[in-house]
Image 1 (cartoon, rainbow, N blue to C red):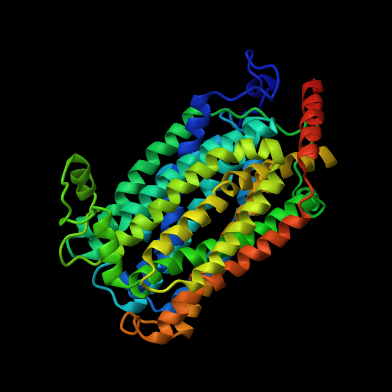
Image 2 (cartoon, rainbow, N blue to C red):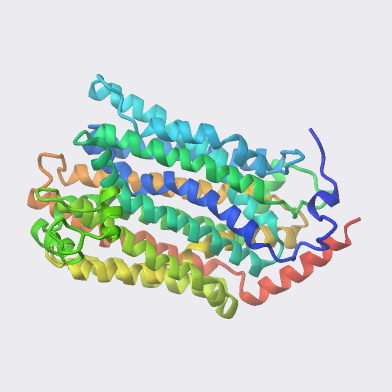
Length: 505
């Protein structure tokens, strides 16, 4: 175990923690989020459908499974944050965990989306519970330190927002791939065997994820350290969080936002598979030129066909239609991420975040008014929702970093890993509640694969994809009213904390 020197955080060419980060370091950090998003996007978009339609788990059991596993595992996140804060290694506090967890992360990820052969429903449920629990634990092992790393790479609040933008451009790029190509790849690689297709597709994602985590490890540096005289005390860490009003607001907001993301993401799979009118969706896909009946079969068409993103005669249009729907939202979100920093620099993170979340809430409610044949309107709503929500994506994590600064500014103590771990706890709890609500609602409306087209079930899916999903978003907006770090306070904290750090012997 090696201790840090000041020079390990402030190399000779770097006199203070506000130095601008290089493009290589920002890009290197960002691909770690792309790796994590291979898992995260599958969980919020496809997990419910995979478990019910491929693994054969009932909707009611699904709801209970997601709640128990995610909530129980979420308790591990603060523990992991405390462990990371107390890690003393020549590579830093947080970077080593990104390296150490890379291969276990990939292996468990693949196992969680591989259906065990020759087993009954009870055995598959047990297998899902074990592999999913392990996946969530290794996700914490990796993602809590990875998220905290952003808080110690630079002490400049604006630069941190820029770093978050890089991070989520890469993350949304991964979401574009996962949400757009997963179902087509499953169909193409499986050749009619969805279980085989899922296993092979996730194996590809897992291998790529390992490479991305290695890039993050080798290209990043930790520069901000706790005050030298700080005693690492878990009781004090907890007390600091309880006194940190902005962090409490972020905790509540994150919990409810991720309830929506889980509930909405899972319901969209059923929405396109069963609620949307198949002939209308087929006609829409054909107009986009993504069907073998299209006139142009050039190189671009061949590439799309290689990934299964081309509808052939007799194919279910929901897979291609849902993929294109997701990819449209991802592209618009990337543009939103890119404008997040300039908007935040001008208006402040809180104002931009709250406005964007409120707009996304209203659009989500409007989804209820769409008919099964209103394909164009569905895509328009997706564009509007992504436009409003996009800028909030990097700001959430940049604001969490600001709450770590706020705690240090107010108390003289810093526990970056613990601060980020607490919010990751809220994130996972939100995913758990959202997934559970999704499963329980499906069960309440009588969903099974056989009853999926019954009017009562379709009506339930419609409510889930719109009004039910919007309610937690709205509560998240209310939570932001209690976030007190304004643009002016951010600037003041950055200035004063920089002076304190440079004054340390």
